[in-house]
Length: 142
Image 1: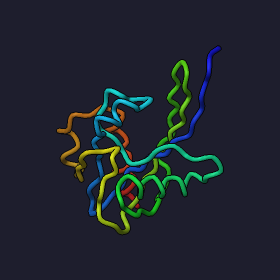
Image 2: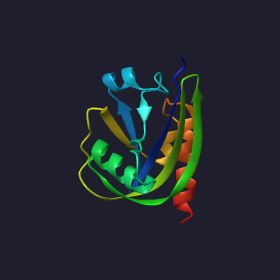
Image 3: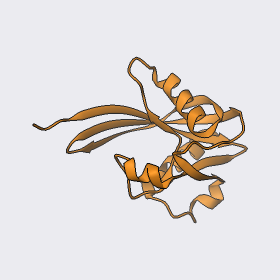
Image 4: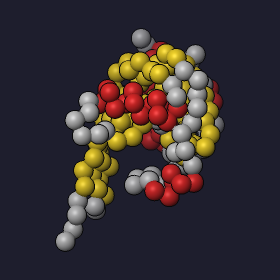
């Protein structure tokens, strides 16, 4: 019997002082991730719990993974990751840092605050760079 799973995930592009937060997945997180297991770079976020609103889940996940409090500005992108045994819809939001000291959970082992200028030189998938470019365009036009 084939088991098929559906999940809803949320991610945040967090901006602070015109820099954007980029996380690096820990080895244990890389081993258990369901999609993008070859890509070590990540945004804060995760799965929505049953009966949890997207915004509440996003704020919870960002706090759990980074220790930061953010304000949600707007949705940036919706993506469907469809695999043979998984369908995950991922909503990525633009968020602004409001408070907190960055403290990583065990899901990540390092982080960078990157500027627009630094983005092009970073080794990461184009789809992830595009999330940052979308966030930069939106944030600079607020």
